[in-house]
Image (cartoon, rainbow, N blue to C red; front, side, top):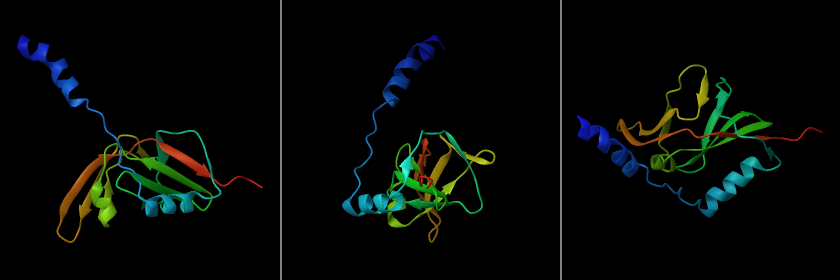
Length: 133
């Protein structure tokens, strides 16, 4: 029992590797810039309210946009990567409550064969707003 307690920090340290997100392709970069054109980034937030009119748009296996309205889009850099999203797989999120929050588990799934193709988590949400006139 004591040996397990003494080894726990070592085991946790071994799991704490670094993760470097894959670079965006030119096409993905252009798509991201087009979606956020004319909008100004704000302070990151941990949670956003789910709305019936809100929709997710996949940019890459680690970046998604959550569109709340024509004037507000949240950029989310996923924790980890769901590579199946770039192939057109469906993103499935299991939120707890009425908000999407940092740490909510997201999965990519190929619905035609019923198989999960990746698992990641939502990161912080960066709001991009159209400036007022």
